[in-house]
Image (cartoon, rainbow, N blue to C red; front, side, top):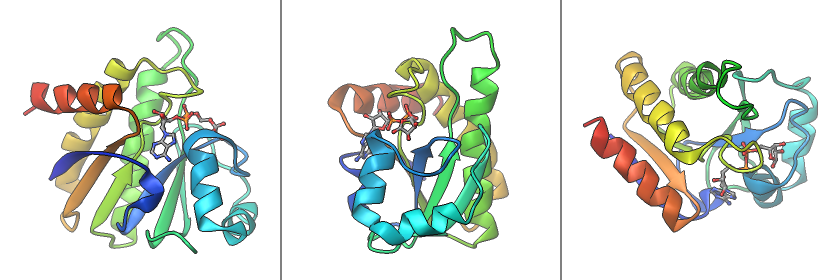
Length: 168
Ligand code: APR
């Protein structure tokens, strides 16, 4: 069910791609910037209506010009050394994004490596949080048929695959 896929998440034709956004939901760099560029200006307009998003929470919009039909915007924690509840907040991003997909009866979802870029979360620890949270939560998502963990770089793909193998 959970697979690692390497490449640009904006190209994936899945029911929802997850955006690693910031609390404003008004765009940014990294995967947030790529998703807004690919979705077109309507995405920003839709995000303006959402009134922001708290860390660890998730909100959904249409995908507009993306091949994905929806974008689930979530805000990961900024890494502060690991003693400020970052793991719980990151787990909440995966948990709440999956719950939102379930609410909307979506059957496929693709996650970027939330917080592993600008927000500085150590990739190995983030991968373990992603895999363990998704494995724990998929029991509550009976319709979900395909969950992709998207790596943009080779190193992240290796780290995600290793995390999956550890938790087989
Ligand atoms: N497809 C898939 N993954 C991507 C893409 C892409 N097109 N572009 C970047 N990534 C990867 C990065 O390589 C990284 O592993 O997404 C992961 C998350 O990195 P960021 O995009 O920097 O997200 P994050 O660390 O959560 O920081 C969020 O950055 O872009 C701003 O507005 C955003 O303020 C927010 C912050």
